[in-house]
Amino acid sequence: MSRTLQAPVTVSFDYTRSVGPVLGRFLTGLREGRLVAARTSDGRVVIPPPEFDPVTHLETDDFVEVSPTGVVTSWSWVPEPVAGQPFDRPFAFALVELDGATVPMLHALDVSSPDEVSTGMLVQVRWAEERSGLITDIACFEPVAGPDEVGDGVSGPGRARPELRDEAPTEQSRPGEATGEITTIITPVSLDYLYAASPEESAFYRGLLEGRILGQRCPTCHKVYVPPRSACPVDGVATTDEVELSDKGTVTTFCIVNVPFLGQKITPPYVSAYVLLDGADIAFLHLILDVPAEEVRMGMRVEAVWKPRDEWGTTIENISHFRPTGEPDADYDTYKQHL
Image (tube, rainbow, N blue to C red; front, side):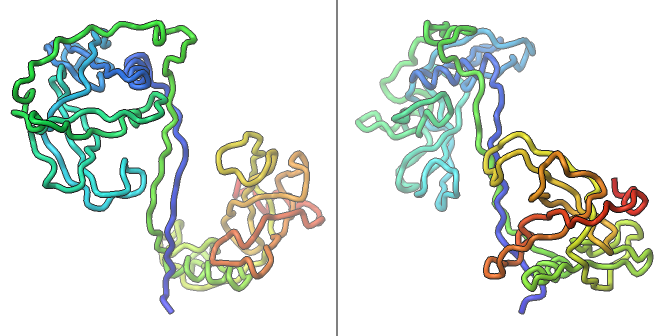
């Protein structure tokens, strides 16, 4: 049996941000099937538009609408897409200089092999069937079929640069009006990684599988840490002795969770608290249930409520929560240094 355990972990949340008036104009344009760029003080036309002019550092205020066709200036092949990318099949990422723009923008190019993409080829925007004001409203770029399929790297043979059209607020997108102007976006953020536990942590997780709580003791200061640590944070020496701890303890600090959030498994209000297990010198975080939230207090004596054995794995979730033992509150001096 391997000395250490490892497991895949996904950390994810929805990030909500204000987009401001410049990106809001760009995103509103996407929702309406328009490509809004900005003209900078040095004459460049940039899409997506920058919020501030890179030369003068003034707020961007000169907007133009550019064409949905352009040429590939550079590209990279993606043979094995990962979760969250535009396609679940091989594709290319390409820098595309749209007609009317002078700086390329990055997006996916839908081609089936590297042989189907080349620098200078003519491409066009493929709009998403349903648009909501996100960059994904552009589903991808796709090759333009026909005799002008391959361009000269600038504007394609026989194609003149289109005349730029000033972009002004429309009745659908006039700032400040309740007409659906994009002001905020919600972006899902996710990170997948493989977590490798230390030998001490692995022993802790295997102990949970047996219904035991294991910590490590520092040979110098004799403090007991749970979950265990490979080295004592006080003395910096390796912990050496494995200690089995009680599943009873004392609430040190806590908070009452009143606000619902995505992925929440328990209906608020409920209490999340640091519990100092008997015999331990560091508290760890868990839930306090089976008691009204307003009755939880510092010093309350609690005990672990284990899930049914057939639901146990190598995680702290083997303990469903902690509940009051009914014992008198612990003396303040026994936990004051953990506040």
